[in-house]
Amino acid sequence: MRGTQESPENAILLTATQVAEMIGGRVEGNPDVLVGGIAPLSQAQGEELGFLAQRRYLRDLGHTEAEALLVGEELAEAADGHPCRIVVKDAHGALPKLLSHFYPSPPHEPGIHPTAVLGKGVDLGKGVSIGPYAVLEGGVILGDRARVGSHAVLGAGSRVGEDSVIHPHVVLYPGTKLGARVILHAGARVGADGFGYVPDGEGVAKVPQVGGCVLEDDVEVGANTCIDRGSIGQTTVGRYSKLDNLVQIAHNVQVGRGVLMAAFTGVSGSTEIGNGVMTGGQAGFTGHLQIGDGVRVAAKSAVLRDVPSGMTVSGSPAREHRETLRAQGLMFKLPETAQKIRELEKRLAALEGSGEG
Image 1 (cartoon, rainbow, N blue to C red):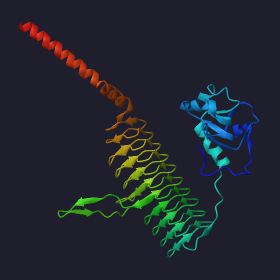
Image 2 (tube, rainbow, N blue to C red):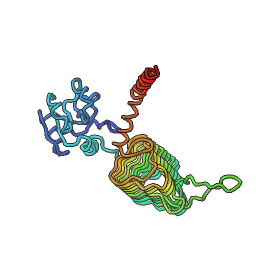
Image 3 (cartoon, rainbow, N blue to C red):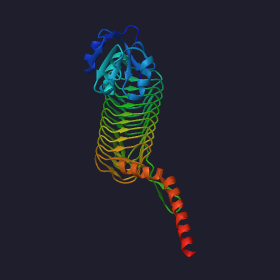
Image 4 (tube, rainbow, N blue to C red):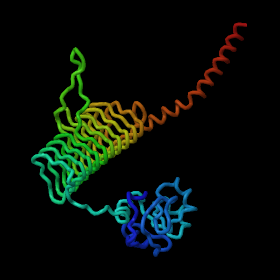
């Protein structure tokens, strides 16, 4: 649970009481323990707050060096032998405030590196920063305080909203639009041509991909994720949605608000993903589907048909999760069932032989 950088040496330490006030928790034990960071139980040392959110990590409780623990309510009793516990309803939910305090982002330094290339008509907002060898083609609009990392390429006519962060080696194809506070991690490709081809009698002809690609406010996209532009119309990722590394979003896909997609999720063309959908790793969707709000898709599931709102699905092909579990339970009993069938066949054969005698 460490941040991307260590806490600065001159960071102001907080007492357990102050930490509890910050995250809406309560202190059990010594309220004056000083806290200057947070780490997993097995790695926490001294003034680092030991993080305990899942029962499986109780195994590390007996030998942690953390002087104080951050504990979820359901594990508070199991950790009552530790001298200082900060108990909250949801330990994971408390992390954003704590990590932002103990591991603040480095100050933003505006400026344009001399090796950056800016095309004709580029419009730069206030306080932007553009890194080494970045390329902004003609007509790019960069909002206030936006940051573009080294070797990133922003295609002609792209728009980037205020406070957005584009990490190194990101590519925005021409006309891509990003809202405010969008984060694109290294190697993401946004607005590329979709997989559109038709047989033409002599071979396979490419269908021109002339649509757009829009990422709304507060979207975050993981490293090496690809989001295609629309063939016609546009591909959209809704506000607050978070895509992990190596996710594929095909042309004309509509991703709703607050969607969470784990790594290797793949969505085929023109599928509509509702608000608040969550997908496990390697989940896949065929094209032209409608996935309702709040749907949960288990890892490695293959979604081949529409899914109504609120349903949890799993398996390949994906179906209602409890139905999949029942089917798997029966499948695991197949060897035992097959053995019983063989025994019954032997008994039947013996009875038939006896009758013939």
